[in-house]
Length: 111
Image (cartoon, rainbow, N blue to C red; front, side, top):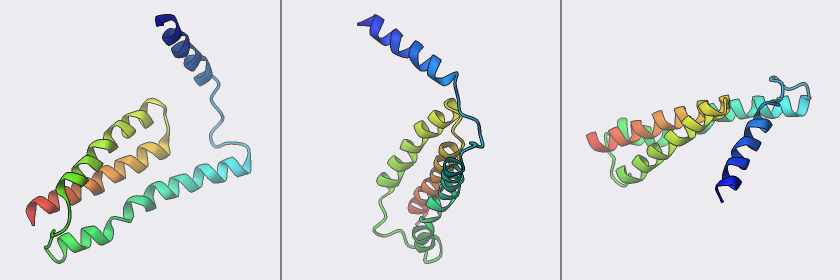
């Protein structure tokens, strides 16, 4: 069984040595890359209504601290994954999600 695991690891190393150019020469793939960077920023902005409810109205009723704590905790492995694999959209998106989720957690603890 150990041979199967090491074979997979070495196979992944070989695959990652042939990275595609960035920005990609294909217009469609380049568009997708750019669209994901935009989504990486816009996605976490979807928490603005929740943040507004908490910090403007100073009311966190109905907002689960535990749920948003889990969301924040689950963002961390994604950030690490993005760093390890040098995936800028993943690092950007999950760093912003982590900030948004932690802000909500802090707000629920304050109010």
